[in-house]
Length: 139
Length: 368
Image (cartoon, rainbow over the protein chains, first blue to last red):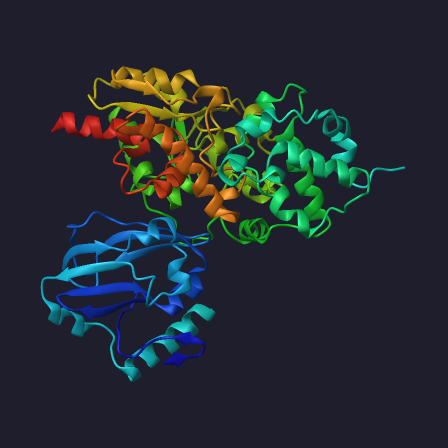
C-alpha cells in the first residue's frame, strides 16, 4: 500500500527501524523498506557479515551507509544469519532501486519463527506507524 | 585585463607550466579508477587553460571534473614541471563556490558545519566513557571520522593510551573544519575558536590527534596559530607511539597503508613503521608505499561526493594488499580505515584496522 508516497507492502512484517521481514520457507528474508531507503539516499555500503553469525533480538549486527547517513541493522528475531545478498557488495544501490526485490539484504534462520508476530504487521498498524514516523522526521 | 578568477591571479603561470607529459596520469587514483582523462591533473590543467583563455566558462558542467580529486598530491610529487595541482584545485573550487557553482555534497557540508559540531550532523556525541576537559599533560583530539564512524578504533586507541600510561584528557571537541578549505569554503572560525579554547583550558602542552587531517589543520592553518603562539605542540599519534616499548608481537603478515594526509602531506613515513616493525617481524611493504602510496580514495571530500569512485579507488589499493599476501593491513588514519573497510570484498580475508587498535588487541591478549 502507499502511504504518503512511500510504498509499504501490507503483507510484510516491519521492524520499527524500518526493515521489512518476510517468511520464505524456513528462513526470514530482510531488507530496508521504502521509507528508510528514501530517507537514507543512495546507499553506498552494506556490511555483509559472515554466514552463521549469531543474531540476538534487538542487537545491531551490521552497518549500512549512504553519503550522509550511518545506519544499523538490528536483528528482528533471535537466530542465525543464513545468507547475505552478495550483489550488494559491489552494487549497494540495488536497495534504492528495488528494496523489496533485488535489494533484499539478509536471510535469517530464526530460533522461533513466532517472534515475527511481535513485529509491526497488518495495514492499520503499518499505516499508523509510518504516519507517525513521517511526522517525527519532518521535525 | 584583470583576471576574472582568483586561481588565475595566483596560479596562471603554474597552469601554463603543465607540459602535458601525463606523468600525473600514471599516479592519479581518480584516473586509475575511472580512466577519465579530465579527472586527472593533466586534464584539469587543460580545462583550466581553456577557462583562462575565455573559451569555456567555469560553471556547473565542470563540477564533476573539478570537484573530483582526493588532493592526494601524487600528481604534484611526480610533476616534472612543478605544478602544484592540489593548491590550484582548491583555489578553483573557491572560485566556483564564489560564483555559486558547487557540488551539493560540499555545499551541504558547509551548511552542516554552520549549525553542527561535526561533518555528519550527528546530534548524539559518542560517549567514550572518559572524563573530558580536565587538566592533563596531553589532549587527545579524536576527529569526526574517529568519533562518528570508527568509534571501535577510537575506543581501542584510548584503551591503548591508558595501558601505556599517557596522561591525557578528551575535550568537547568540534570539527577542526579544515576540510572546508579543500572543498571551496573557509575554515569555520567559530569551531576553530571553540577547539582552541577547550585545548588551552586543559593546560596541556601537546595535542595528540587520531586524525592526520586534524593534525595538519592545527599545524598549518592560521586560524589555529594561537595554539603555536601559546606553546602547544600538535602531533599525530604515530609520532607519540614510536617512543614506547610496547612489549607485544604478532606472527601475522602485516602491511602498512600510508595515508596521504600523514605521508605525502606531512612527510611522516618512518614513525608508523618503527612502531609496526617492533610488533610485527613479518612486516611487508605494499608495492606502492611511502611517497608513492596509492590513495584510499576518501580524501578531498570525494568519499562524501563521489562514493562509488571513492570505493573503486580503495579497491585498487586493496588489490596490492592481496598481492603481497597480507593478513593484516594497518594504517594510521580513521578515514582510510573506514574507506578501505567499506571497499574490502568478502573474498579478501585480510583484516583492516588502525595500528593502535591492533596493538591494543595484542596487549589485551597478552594480559589474558
